[in-house]
Image (tube, rainbow, N blue to C red):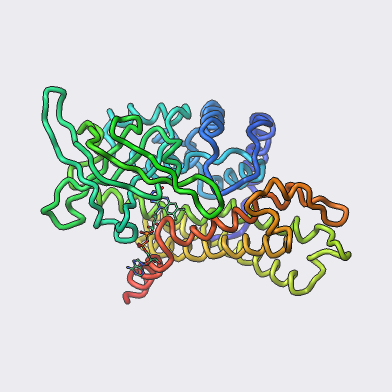
Length: 404
Ligand SMILES: Cc1cc2nc3c(=O)[nH]c(=O)nc-3n(C[C@H](O)[C@H](O)[C@H](O)COP(=O)(O)OP(=O)(O)OC[C@H]3O[C@@H](n4cnc5c(N)ncnc54)[C@H](O)[C@@H]3O)c2cc1C
């Protein structure tokens, strides 16, 4: 791999910056965070991107995407985060969309893709169940095939858990068991379900950052047309493996890592009450330098995994797992460093960040700087769990890379 800077990318970066300056409305600008933005913001921003021809920045041109290289995608994401653009519907952009492009029928694409491009349909993921997380193939949500005068349909019964943004999504992509007699992986099918279908109940789970991102989702005799099944009945597991491989690599979240680093630099430069700045303290300066080096290393790692994926190299899968472990642990350490740098103000910012607005430190106010940092640090505890736990990723690396 060639890691040297590509001068051609500079022009692209300027184009993206210019676009963001001209087209990102002031009222849509937010402090970047891991979480998907509110539906209205996602929808408006998606429409603006689509109008510019950038509605699917991660997809190949033949699927209506921009056809950008991995380097261009990284620049685009980095500039969007730096400008405070809303966080898009990653479920569709990075997980379901590539899967639909590969496996959906033309009718299914015609049903879902135009609505996605126009920002009119947001998605959530219904995979995990109580007792079926890492061991996903043990899932029990049942879909039984029925025939009546209205046509062939499944009747779905069961429970999903940790449904991110389930309360503010229009559709859910769902793994269900259609055959209880087959080997556990063989009896699974992949369905797309309208969240307004009668029989679906969404209940909130409040997370450690005192926010509502997560839900339990219950299915009670939910009728799903057979036409909403992706692939053959029982082929859901093979399709899902394609999606999960993508999920491991995307959780690296390099643009957010770079944003966290910028925040840490800002904290390091904030005047301290007793004089001086954190940057001048050797212990902190070493920590900052180390974290910066690690973010740069993850940046190279991301490019390496992307290059392997583009070459369809089988090592992309275990290397993606290795990247997931490395990058998510780094997300946790940088956000912990934020809170450590805030000292007492880190505690003030949690759980009511607005109260931190009154706190001042030397000539600069910590308002804005402190806000939300503790919440982000707390939520990042989950990043080594979602998208496949670190223990499971390490097992993948041991098995596929070292044959253990
Ligand atoms: C914030 C957040 C958002 C999420 N969003 C979604 C979502 O939108 N949709 C969705 O479907 N799911 C979602 N999940 C669920 C996520 O995919 C699961 O939490 C994850 O797969 C782990 O499953 P589990 O929680 O059941 O833990 P378990 O699988 O029960 O694991 C418990 C512990 O045992 C360890 N362990 C399990 N199996 C092994 C093994 N074979 N070898 C070694 N150690 C093992 C794990 O590493 C972990 O430490 C989300 C989770 C979180 C925390």
